[in-house]
Amino acid sequence: MISRSWVDVALGVVLALGVGILIVGGSTDRLPWAVAGLVLLVVAYLVARPTAGDEDARRFTVFTVVATVAMAAMSFADASLSTMQVIVYPLVWIFAPLRRDGVTGSIAIGAGLFVGYAGGYAFVPEVVAQGAAVAVLSVAFSIAMGWWISAIAAYGTERARLLDELSRAQQQVAALSRDKGAADEREHLAREIHDTLAQTLAGIVMLAEQAGRRSHAGDTDGAAAAVQRLEVAARDALGEARAIVARTAAVPADPVLAAAVERLAERFRADTGLEISVVDTASGVDRETQVVALRCLQEALANVRKHAGAARVTVSLSREDDGALRLAVEDDGRGFDVASPRTGYGLDGMSDRVALAGGTVEVAAAAGAGTTLTVRLPASQGTPVAGASLAVPA
Image (tube, rainbow, N blue to C red):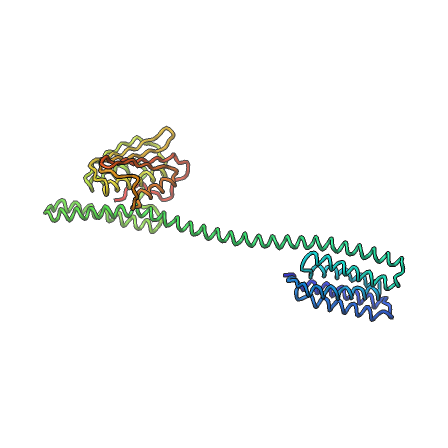
């Protein structure tokens, strides 16, 4: 919206200039023409003013006709009043709905200026030529300046529109980013719960079942041992839950991968009776890779416990020539069809975790021939995961 206040001020200054011209040296016999011209200019302005910034074609037509008559009357009354064109031409371009309307309006004002100026001198040939030259020059200047300024205004309007669209697009991107971040956070939290707390709770269930069976069988010592391990596992689960809520490490930090792997294997040996052998030739693995590898091993052993029906498991950790860490978990269980649909979250969650670290997961299995899970994790050059831990959940 064009500000009307500065236009009001400009028009008032120019009208005061016109009145001053009449007072100082105006012709008394043509004074009514001059006054009529000034009044008509004000009327033309008042007709078009309400549409400044929201141009209306009909009001502009009325403005152009009245302003042309006003310009002719003032130029006829006193040649000095031709200076009123300094405000009339800009008003034409301010109120013009389109650039072509500005051109048409400028030509009309120029024609009124010419007729009034030449008519004031009875259309003497020399004056006609002079008036025509002045009118042509003023119209040309008005069109050139008006076209240029309107082009700048149109550019500014278009730029403002594009900036507004960009701002809305940025807001949409920010909203989508927040939604994506929230979804990623939920997925991360689900993965952490599955890899830590859920596994510990699964162990607690198995320990509770063992304690119940041994109690019913009269094996009080075995039941007591199971209950003792159950208490330890429950305390670990409580610690993990508190750590997840606090968004810190799932368990206290342990910098040695081999010790964490052996402790995890021992926990599964005690809970399941599986024969688990560990072959560890890896060394110098960065902390982030160690965390991912341990979580994958934990999930793999949990799957063996729940689904494989195996008696023996072999866990091997090694470094490849390019520095990548290779984790292989092989069991002698019943195996499964890797192409069949899966309903659990374990392998998919493991694959997502490994993919985020830039690694790969391969599963080789056949019915009755056991399963081999192979995880390959590239050597990481990044910083360790804040708050990550290598300690083993129950």
